[in-house]
Image (cartoon, rainbow, N blue to C red; front, side, top):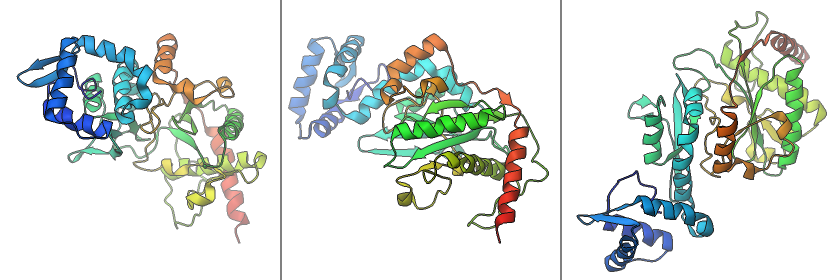
Length: 354
């Protein structure tokens, strides 16, 4: 595992390997023991040595690819995700590049027992512009790509994202019911959003509206945070709150758009409006979730009822992608009717406030 996740031809020294196998096995290996293990792999043609440095061979890679499924529970699970990510992303790179185009992207990097979200390289925000960029991040264990909802230097989001964040006491089947109801509600306005699995316990609906001004009658909702500016980010966030308020009629007590008090939401589904802000980010379609190793895969609404998380295994997603191509293309849609009804609702709420 230590050698197979390195880039092809990458040579590493014996001490590096000794440290890694000591950590993974849970006991200290001596240099002699490590050298003996490497010697046996060299004899089998799985590893080559060059000036006391070691690299895996193609035969070693083929052997590991055949072997890991049989022993997966005994492997370093973080490194197994990195290994699988390196095999997965080259197949779907074009779809990832399309969604990341012309925008900043954060990247989750994964190592044994720790993961962190990296937003910058030095003083610059990260961009993903080519296959080589993707490969460079994979080489430093960047496996989960989180683009911003607006393009670089834009004053508005160009995605409208409904993120369904399930509290820990809410079943996935109940989340599916809410997602289907939300999809039907948006359909009434001619908005047919794209659906994707989050890669963990939730789902998202995305839409892209035709370029539009703010509705003349729109005034931001009054929230606890105080006065809010009249701009497209706040408008889209308020649209999320509007949708939740309408769907909630069919699911009393189950949904909320209030992001505060996470523990109080353990039995609720949050419609997360906090994504709709400057520098708001969201997991890319076809990205690997750094915690689960599952893919944030696109779905058709008709597939939702029968969906199971194991359907989002990287190999299954690649097979589907090679058959169907990119299933997360977002054509711009007319949101005028949707906006009009939302603004009327904002006004009604404001009039009800003493």
